[in-house]
Amino acid sequence: MKRLIIPATSPLFIVMLGLLSALPPLATDIGLPAIPTLQSHFGISIGHATQTLTVFLLGFSIGPVLFGPLSDRYGRKPILLFGVGLFSIAAFACAFAMHIGDLLAVRFVQGIAAGAAAALPAAIVRDVFSGREGLSRQSYVALVMGVAPLVAPLMGAALLQAGNWKLIYDCLGILGVGLFLLALFGYAETIDLTVSTGQSHNVLAEAMRAYSSLVKNRQYLLNTGHLATTFGTMFAYITGSSAVFIDMLGLPNTVYGVIFAVTAAGTICGAASNGHLVKALGEDKLLQVGVCGGFIVNLVLLTCALFDTRSPLLITACVFGSNFFTGIVMPNATHQALHSVGHIAGSGSALQRSLQFLSGAGAGALVGFIAVNQLKGMAVTMTLFAAAGVILLLFRNKRQWAQ
Image 1 (tube, rainbow, N blue to C red):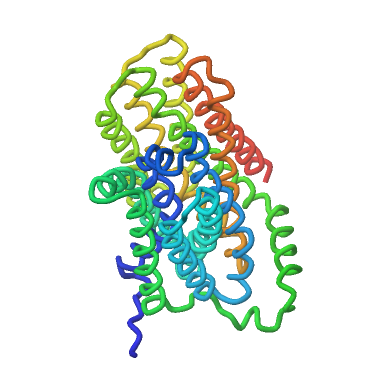
Image 2 (image 1 turned 45 degrees about the vertical axis):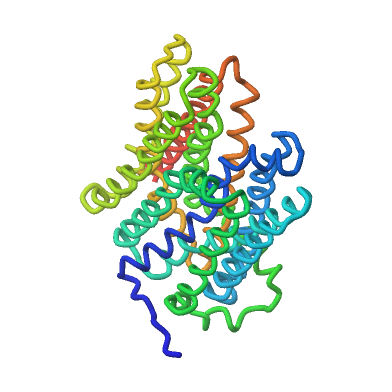
């Protein structure tokens, strides 16, 4: 069969990378409406049902670190095909789970598989593009990825109306099959394997050397820190949003769904703006604008919380602004971090994704831990993570002035 290779400049190539990056939010957010159904189906508590999200995220945090170095050694394509293929098989297996323990075990495997696949798009962009063109492409990948949290809960609700919770996992499996075929026939290897053929076959030793090199690279660490703190800010909102708008403000589920879609669109708008502005303003300036702008907007949100201002419109506007600046920071931080790591970009991208989700998990836990009320817990956490980004920016600028 003649293979149809998608040109790297094609919009379909960006869509493919965006969908691969979106596997984690798709696989988590699409199942949110089904959690009460899982509770009744398996006869478990709501907390036990939500572990289907927790174990997926735990698996995902492992996947990138494990498979990123393998992609540097053996190429992006075999790791990509393995990750997407295993993701699809695990999704179908979820639909056949007879007990909650079986479902949790398969979801953990699915998380690892998603981590293997979703860690590679940023490295692939780094392989193919350079300079501001690379950053522009990364912004468009982030734009496609940003659509996932916008539509996933709505898709999950529609699938529940059409069938049951098993249909959700069947659709994830079908998505995985489609991406597998697209990568198999449309993606040509983007890394020069001749560089790695003469290296040691001890993959573990190579991985340790790669990660040791990454943690010594200050430019990589600072930019990855921006990525992690920004993601933590966003995930604090994701964790606390339903409690704020539904439990605290008493809004109907349908209104909350609209609000969530509007705030998620902020990230899309930010990524789109970044893709257009980066060639004119430069990535350094845009990164500073994104970090500082996000901090200011979150300060406004914190002020609303401290003065007990319970305006859904104002809270929504603040979160939209925060997510808008998140859409600016994340592609810039991703590109600048990977720009300095050369042939270990796969390992660098993998470590980025793992730290992202660890930061998000920490933010989610902090929301509940410090909550005086729902809004204050969410606002304080978002502001703390945004402030951490400003501190990293000050440290970054101090080093530049010293040079």
